[in-house]
Image 1 (cartoon, rainbow, N blue to C red):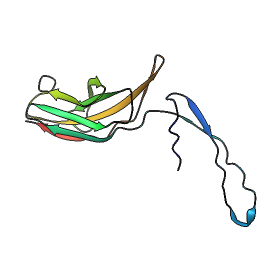
Image 2 (cartoon, rainbow, N blue to C red):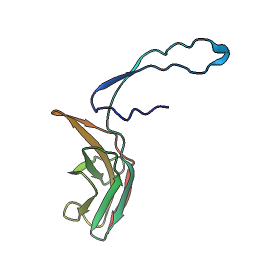
Image 3 (cartoon, rainbow, N blue to C red):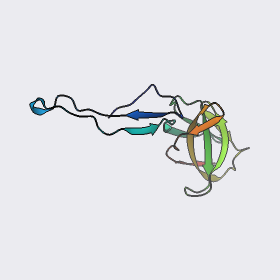
Image 4 (tube, rainbow, N blue to C red):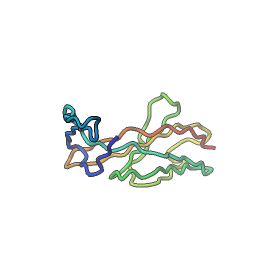
Length: 130
């Protein structure tokens, strides 16, 4: 596999592959061209810790411009965006009700001009706010 670390979000890149060091010194040809639009990567290592009346929500930074934090009261329920942030965030009982279980997920975003590009959501974490 190959990771192109020098891409710009929102731009389309084209790639072709050629085998190297094949048997009997035959000439290898390039593969057909594929295209891929660069998008923000998925948020990894989401952690949610319960601190009595608030959640501490953190993740491994994947170098996005910012992040959106969402929650729901059931795993497949309707998720509500709680905040936009650039780093670890605390969600308090002012935003959520005490005594309930919440499902939390995060996604990163990047901007290019006035266009916003969203990455895929993180895994969902289940936590009780007690």
